[in-house]
Length: 207
Image (cartoon, rainbow, N blue to C red):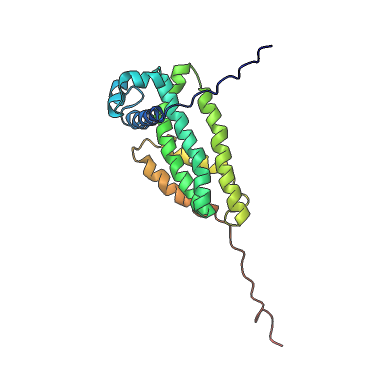
């Protein structure tokens, strides 16, 4: 009786292909930020030092490239949680992540409208990212509460809402500077309040 052959494991992308994809995404993010979602794909390929065929092999449509850039930004936020938490005290890690979140908002302001237009409504990619981002900042805040550095009544999502509010309510081109200043204000307000020290010496009437 013939034995079944095991299916070969799917091949991993070649290292050079992974590098090409990463370089395309980095250049595309810069191009979309500077020129909007209609930035030339041929120029993106040229700046990434790849041929148009290579770009379209990785991203068959403009919408696929826009979605790829957006997913990458969300993945950076998720990866940064562990990186910052391992290298910094809780409040510093939270501050560093929130500054990165400001950069994410800047990219999202350009990409989200184009992504929503491409799918004819609110993109499921964007909806799915909310849960991921909320979980990340909740993890950073939980760590700070556990260490005693962050106040226990802090709602992590309030921090996100404050930064998003600055981004979308301000028509000024320098809103990112305002958002970064707001990060420090929010961090100051997130600190756990020190308990007053009550001195027991000379606290009562002299006998």
